[in-house]
Image (cartoon, rainbow, N blue to C red; front, top):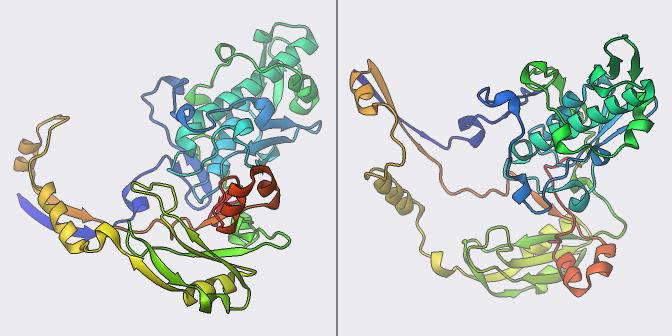
Length: 402
C-alpha cells in the first residue's frame, strides 16, 4: 500500500460540491435522484420560509391566443440558472413547446408569489416541486377545457407538445385555442393533479434548454439591480468595523462632508451577536453619486472598538481546529468496514482541506434600494433605513438579474 499525502487549501465551494443544477455555460439540466418513485410530490422545506409556497398556475402561467406561453420566474437569477430551470419545470409538466415559451421576471411580492428570498442555494431545491405542480395543474386545466369543448370525458384527452389531443378521434386543439376557457377554470385540487413520470420528461435532466438570459448576460445587455436609476436617487457607501463584533467608538466626518456630492453621514447601529443577516454597524456616507460616496467614506476619520475579537489570531484558530479535528469524534453513522478497506487498499490518498474565514460580500455584492413611496408608507423608520440604504422592502444584489 502506497500512502499519498496532499494538502489542498482554498478549495472553492463550486469546485468541491456537486449541485443539482448543471449549466455547462450554455444549457440547463436538472439532475434527480432516481430512487424517488417517479419524483412524486414531496415536502421541499419551502413552506417553512417566509411567504411560504404558491404554485397556482393563475399566478405563474398565461397563454395568449397565438399559443405563446408566458411563465413568471419569481426567483432572482444569480448565475445558477434558476430563472431558466424553474420555468422549465413548469413547461415540462405543461407539455409546452419551449420555443413558444417566454420567461418574465416577477416583481417583489411574496404574498402573491410565495417566498422570494433568493439565497442559500435554495431556489431549485425548494421550488422544483411546486413549479412542477404548477405546470401539471395548468396542463389539467387545458385538458379539462378541451374535454368540455368536445363534450367528452377528460380521461379521453391528453396534452402533447403544445396541443390537447382527443385520443379516440385524433382531434387536436392548440393551447392558444383553449387558453381563455382554461384560464377561467378554478385551479384543480392537488389530488386531481398528476405529475409526469421521469421517463416522460422533455426538458428536465435532458440538457437541451439554453439559459434564457445567456445572450443578454454575455453581451452586456442584462439589467441588474445595481443598474437601477431613479430620479434624484442617492448613493450610500458604508465603512464597517474591521473586526467582527467590533463597534464604532467615534468618528469625525468633517473632511467627508467636504467631498463634492456628499450630503449626509449616518451612523448605523450594530446588532448584538449572533448578528446573522442583521446590520453589523458602521458609518454610512450618502451622496449624489457613487464616486462621492466612496471618496466620502475614505475621508472619514474613524476610531473602532474591536471588541471581544480584538486579539483574534487566524493561525492560532486554524491550529485549534486541526487539533480538534484529529481527536476521536462521536460516531453517528457507521457503514461498511473503513479500517479494513484502508488497510488492504493498493493505494490510499490522504488530503486535508482548509478554508480560512472569508467575507461572503464579494460573492454577492449587496445593493439595497429604497423608494420615496416606501418612505410614505412606512414612516420615519423607513426613512431612516432609506438614509442608510438598507431598506427591507426592495432588495437586489448586483449579481442578481432583474
